[in-house]
Amino acid sequence: MDIVVKMKGFYHQYICSNKPYYSVIIEDEGHVAYAYLLKKKKIIAHLWLYNQLNQMDNSSLESGDTFVMPLENIKPGFKLNPIINQEDVYVNWNFSEDSKTIEASIFIRGEFLGNMNNHDKHGCSKAIINDCPGAYRFLFD
View 1 (cartoon, rainbow, N blue to C red):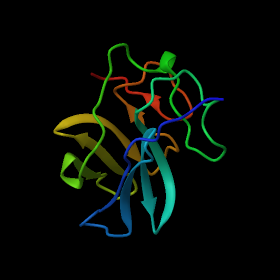
View 2: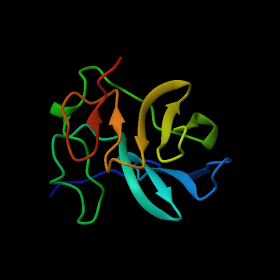
View 3: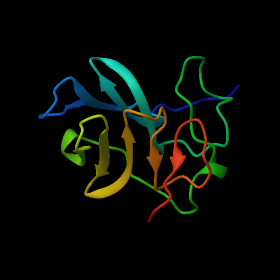
View 4: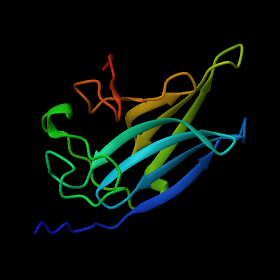
């Protein structure tokens, strides 16, 4: 029998001040953390942020748990301490001139981690080396 130790989680919603119908939810379920871009309370994009578990697959997680990023998709040496409070996260909002594109850039403790926009289901992460269901690799360093 596998025993999974759930670590402390985190949940907070960051509202866009210019367009309050857009927001980002940061959720750490205790084993993995994701960011979700919402428009009018509907998820339109997501971004894997980090794993709290060092495991290769989801086999020991309970049904319904969020996808843990396989290690082969993560940059070697990437480590991010779990988010503890809402001040650990900063969301920078960018809009195209025609306002058709909105981008939410995620910073954790001042370090840029990735971004999401209203045109792509998956966000881009600096910690990913292979495009996968949780995030695309960020092409620029």
